[in-house]
Every structure is written in structure tokens, then in C-alpha cells.
Length: 53
Length: 411
Image (cartoon, rainbow over all chains, first blue to last red; front, side, top):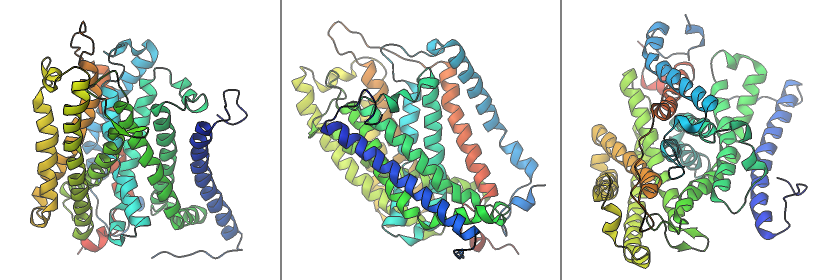
């Protein structure tokens, strides 16, 4: 459900509940995007690969 | 035959032996597959669930595996946020166990809801006043986090690691794992709690209802505590079982002892609060509902023995055992304490689900009994088969235990 859905209600409960959900999803999505961009830059040679031992 | 994809420098049994050992898992999966087809094709009349037992064996399995899988988020929290470096030797196993538990629970729920194609309704048409919605959101999101945590372990496979993009993705994910671990801890905290809260707010059923703090009944906090107390113990048990089957030492003692000690302290704290909660319930909620403690245990097979078993035998005893260093450091006693701890939590979930629904709430009600059908057992046990299969495949092909090579030098 998003604020554009017909069931959405502009009250504090919806804001807290969905606010936390979308925050968690944004962190996960942001992390994955960061990894995707960094990997592309490393593959194209703009960033160096770190070695783990 | 599969030696090029086995981890370097470690010994594994032959592929034929491995497949023969996995035959019981395939049998369980076949049984579960047949049961699932029957339930999806003919409907939930294949089960003994009813309007009384809307929650039954599958939910007992679900809540049990979700509590046992809590080792993943809690070990991740201790490793990446608290920076307990010794736990890096066991974190991979904890993540794989967590992934198995949560994915198995989600698969079982897919059958339980009857029409899995409508499973997304709970996310999109959410009733935000329902604790189950919060549970669904958090479990769904946390499963995504667990997949993200599992992927770098898969990418560590010897052959996959030779492919540059895959190696880079694995390393880059690993670098920001603390972010995912923190998100996982937040999500787990709330869904473990809401699973407990769900029972505590059943005010029409005095057996489960509890008082609480603000909107959260005490069961909310007790479920979180019990999960983080038993999750690490389950990780230890799985590791010890792998060590026993493989005949090798896989994890250094300091990692096991750290987890066991933390688990012991958390279990002690939980059990003290659980005793206080039970006394508060006996002298508060129960008399206010016009009943006595023994009214709940007059009929059916669920007697006071369950309370004694849950709190004393599987609660106080393992807590004391895990807190005493001399006992904790003895391999056999550690396993006994771990089994008791995990059994206690499974009994707790069983009591809140099945016994709550079995006990009559109206004067004209009767005690309800419930015996699962073979289809219900099939799907429940398929999760066990799936878990053993994924764990065995992971151990065989992935470097699950980073110190395995060092602890077992091949001469």
C-alpha cells in the first residue's frame, strides 16, 4: 500500500507503520544499489578491487 | 566427480555417499510435495484445521523455526554491530540456518493461507491494526535481508569466485554487511515481538491474554527474549551435529563458548521474567476472568506437567547449566543444555498456539482436540528435509566454517 492507494488514510498510525516499512526497504534497496554501482565501476576500471584474506 | 567445486584444502565424502545420506531428505520432500499438491488442489479440507483450530501444526512449526532461526539476526548483531570478532567463525552457519528457517516458514505459510496467489494481499491491502500484518511485513523483509546475507557465502564457492563480477558483488555486499545486519536486527525484533503480542492481546481467551506496557502485552517482550535466548543455542546444536557427522572440529571453542554464555544469560533473564509473568497471570488475569489456574488443566492431555516441563525442566535447568562455565565447557552437557533450551521454546510456542485454542472459553464450550492429518505432517516435515538438504549442500560446497582448514590439517 502506498499513499496513492485508495485505502490509505492520512493519520499517525499509517505514517508510523508504513514509514518504518519503507525506511527498512529503502535501506535494503539503497545498499543493493550501492553494491551494483560499485561493482560496475570496478568492472569498468574506475575503482580498485579490495582483496580479502 | 564434484571435486573441482568443493572448497579448497578440506576433505568431503564421495558424491555417492553424500547422495545416499540425503535420501531421507528427498523422501521427506516428496511426502511434503504430495501433501502440498493435495492441499492446493483439493483445498484445506485435507487438514484437520477448523474454525476452532485456524492455527494448527503448521503455525506451531512456523513459530518454532522462526524462534530457532533467531540465531541469524542475533549472531549477526553481535558480529557486525557489537564487533565480537570470534563469532565470524560461526556467523555463516547462523545465516544459513536463519535462511532455512525463514524460507521454510514462508513456504509453509504459502500452503497455510490456502490460496498462495493471494498472498500479496496482506502486503498491499494491509490492516495496520493487526499484529499479523506487522509479522508478515517484517518476516517478508527479513527474508530479503537473509537472502542478501546468504548470497556472498554462495559466491565464495571455489568456481563461482573465479568469475570476476560475481566475486566483486560478493565482496562489496560483504563490506556493507553491517547495514543489512542492523536492518535485520530491527525487523526481527519487531516480528518476534508481534508474534508474541498476537497471543497476549487475545482478551477473550484468558489462557493467553496478558497485561502489558502501552500497546504491547508482556508476551511481546517474552517472545523476543526467548527467541534470542534459544536461537544461538540452535546454531550451536547444528554446528555440533555437523562436527559429529563429519568427524571434524569446525568452530574454535571461544566462538561456541561466547554464544553459549550469552544464550545462558539471556535464558536466565527470560526465565525470571517468564516466572513473574506466569505468577502475574495466575493472580491477575485468571481471577479477573472468573477462573482459577487449575480450570485450564482439567480436561484434555495438556496438564500442569506442560508448565513444569516448559519453565522448570526446559527453562531453569538449561539456564543454570549454561551459566556455569565448567558445565558449559563440557561438550556433552553443552549439547544437553542446548536441546533443553530449544525444546522449552518449542513447548512455549505449542502451548500458546494449540493449548490456547483447545481450552473452552464459554461455560457451554467443550475442550477441543486436534490431531494433524498426514498431509499436515508431510508439509511440516518437508521443511525439516529442505533444511537438512540446504545445510548439507552448503557445508559440502561452500566455505561455511572459515577455520575448518586450519583446525583439520590434511597430512
